[in-house]
Image 1 (tube, rainbow, N blue to C red):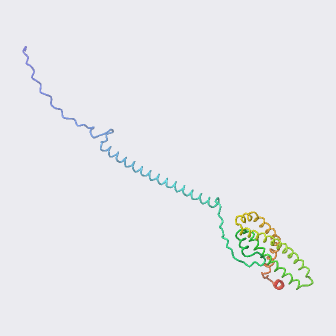
Image 2 (image 1 turned 180 degrees about the horizontal axis):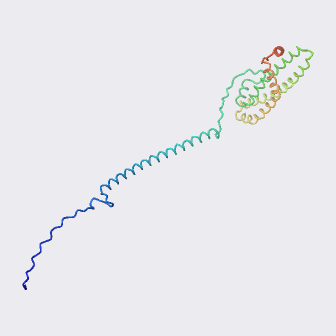
Image 3 (image 1 turned 90 degrees about the vertical axis):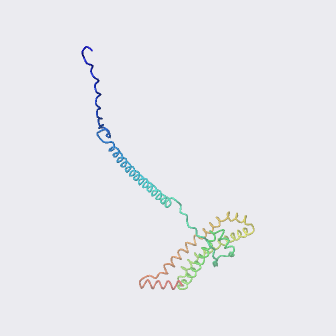
Length: 252
């Protein structure tokens, strides 16, 4: 209209070529995403290795602690057994053996009875029998010395009187004790229950009496045994040997 031409339709704008996304495949800091995965894998491996080492260390530590506790426990048990537990003494079983007892007037079955039910008296009776044999042997030796030295016989006789006195007292006490034991044996054979009761009531008194009667005699026999022991060893030196032989000859 009015002398101007209509503008022709403008051609469509040319397609803009796609711009390459430079951030594709990258992460912050300019690193590629693939690199991040590899780093994570390496980190995971390192963490797993560290965890394994830690577990291994802890296992060793636990085993060490357990071994320490076991060692301490064993040591404590050993110390307790050695120092704090009562040692049980070994019990020696008594076995009866028939013996020749010339100074015991009791019948064999009564002696066996005392061995079983009055063991303290039985042991004292054995010592009593042996002590009388020793005293009789010593009296014999002293009489021989008196015969060898008639002018000094009073010295030997004085010692003999001491021995005879103790020997008589001992025999009198044991005669009474043997009668008590014999009575207990008969009571036991007649009525076992009543006999056991009587034994329990009298056994301490019987043992105490037998021990007290032996005490002075044991002092005599101790001295006699000491003399015999010293006389059995031959001393050195010509003069001492001569005296030893003379003393041994007199003592026969």
